[in-house]
Length: 530
Image 1 (cartoon, rainbow, N blue to C red):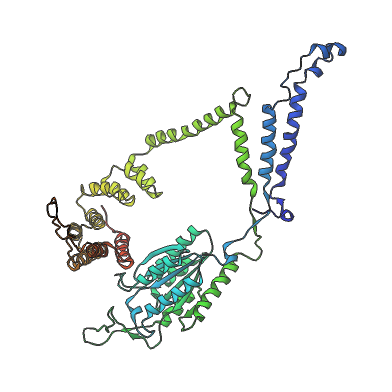
Image 2 (tube, rainbow, N blue to C red):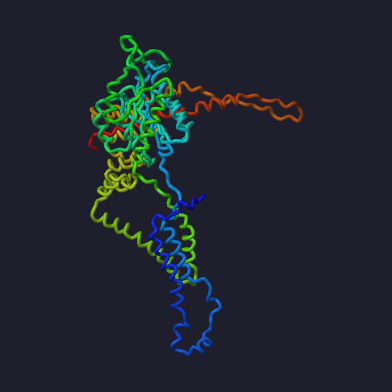
C-alpha cells in the first residue's frame, strides 16, 4: 500500500486535542507520586536524599503510560488520517446494469432473423462481453417477472443462462414491466450503487403505465428500452421452426406494438432505441448508461476520502488487552465490559415479560409477521391458519403442513397444494387445489395453480417415459482355478455411466422453467378468509 504524503490529511482534526491530556497524563501522575516533592517541606533537604529509597523498577512501564498511549493512538485514529479517495463505481463504468428480456410468444416472430428472441439473446451475449468485469443482472418476464441471475461479473455464467432463455419458460401471458421494475429496484438496492434497467421487448401492457410512472417517481433507476421487431411483424414459429397456426389454419403473426413502447418510454422517462444489425445499439446502451452514471454522482458531489484510521484499531486492541494484566490498576476494564454486556441483556427479558403481560401470543405473532420475522411469528401464533402462513413464509413446510391440515377452508387447501407442489407430490397438490375450488368455486389463484400442477405432472411423467432405462449388465466371474488363463470380462460400464449422467443432469432451461413455475405458484396470494 503506497501512501501519497502530498495527499495526507485528517478528516476530523479536532480529535487531536486528546493528544494533550494523553501527553500530560504521565507527567501529572509522576508529579502526584513524587515523594521527594511531597516531603521537601517536612524533612530537611540535606537529609531527605539519604532517607528516601529509590525503587530499582521506578523507570518500568506503568498503567498510566499505557493509558497515555491509548489516548494518543485513539486520538490519531479518531482524527481520520487519509491519503486516498474512494472513487464511486460509476467513475470506472462498473455500476450494475439489469437486463430484462421479454419471453412472450410474440418474441418468436421471424421478422428479425432467426427470431426476435434469438436476435435479442445474441445482442445480450455481445453486451455481456463488452461489460466484462462489470456487474450485470438478468431478469426474464412475460405475464410475470422472474429473477434469472442477480448482478454478476462472470460473463460465462451470464452467457449460459442467456442461452437457456426461451418463450416456453413462463406460462403466464402478458408483459409485466411493472414487476420487472420492482425486481430491478430490489437488485440495485442490494448493490448500493446507481444503475440502469435495459428492457428488450416488442410491446407493453398499457394498463400498467400509471403504476409504472408512480413506481419510478423519485427512484434513481434509469430505464432503457430496446425495441425488438419491425412494423410489418413476422410469423411466429415453434421450437422446431414450423409456423404456428390458428384454428383456421392461418399462420400466427407476432405483432410489433411500437405505439405501446412509445407510451411506455414516455411513462418511464426512458430513451427508446431498437435492435440493429451492427453494434450501434450496444454503443447506444453504453452511452446512455454512462451518462446516467455520471449524472447520478451529482456535479457538486465531492469524492469521498477513505478513512485509514481503522487500521489503528489493531494496535489499540492490543493495548486494551494489556490493560487486563494482573497486578495493574486497570484490571477493572474487563469487569466493566462484562458488566456492560450483562446489563445489555436485561432489557430483552423485561421486554418479553412486558409483552406477555399486555399482548396475547397471537398479537405478538402478528407484530412479528408484519415485521418480517416469520420464524418467530410461527412460534408465537396459536391460531392454526396464521401459524401455517408464518411457517410457510419461513419455509418451515412441515409445520405449515401440520397447521393447515387442521383446517377445512379453501385457503388452507390452497397452501396445502402449494406445499405438495414444492415437494413434487403433484397428485396430492391437484387434489388439494380441487378441494379448494370445491369450497370456493371462484378461486382464481387455486385455478391457476391447479393448471400449473397438472402441467408439471405431465412434464414429469413425460420425462420419465422418455428417459432410457439403463440397467447394469450382469457380470459373472468364473471360479478361480489353480491354473489356467485369465479372461477379461468386457462391460458397457462407461456407456452406462454416461447415460446416467445425462439423465441426472439438469439443463439451465429446465431449472428456470421449474423455478418460474414455483414462483408463479407462490405469487398467487388468495383473497379469501381462513
